[in-house]
Length: 195
Image (cartoon, rainbow, N blue to C red; front, side, top):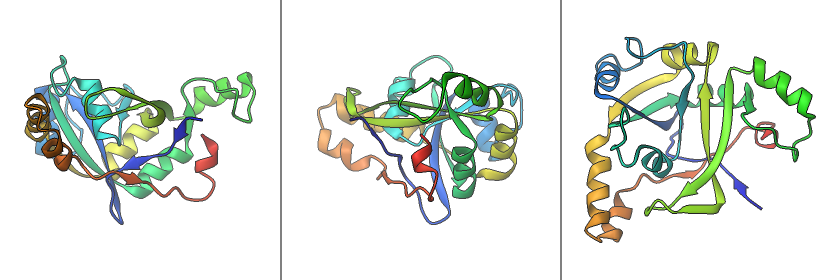
């Protein structure tokens, strides 16, 4: 059975999620501590990921085009949990207690989409039994994200590249020591069983 558990870096009030952008969007976000300026488009779905290694996999350790800058964004836990409560799986899962038609209707009205992808290890190999959550925010969810939830935006590109260099130099233990300490995120009653 594939384990769908949210692992994240979090404290009492905030949870850290990751996004990768080009230099222009990243610099605007760092300067304003949120996403308000073009070329960021709040009309588009924006994906947030609590798994650092999944973000490294997705961005190729900050080498893919338009993903050269990695941002660590602290958001309010209440916002993250609102997103979970107002979400729908992006793909139909017949293991859920819903019909395809009900899922399709919910997908069209939900401001948040959830995907569970294979978690990655430090070598970017898939961990088939573990799933990492991605959340796609649209509409009201994007507005809440940029206006209400974001507490801080930090550029962690150099930090990410440092870990990658240690891995390339076969200094695996040193690289692992630098990874964010991601723990099981305690979901409020009623949320965990939804997905």
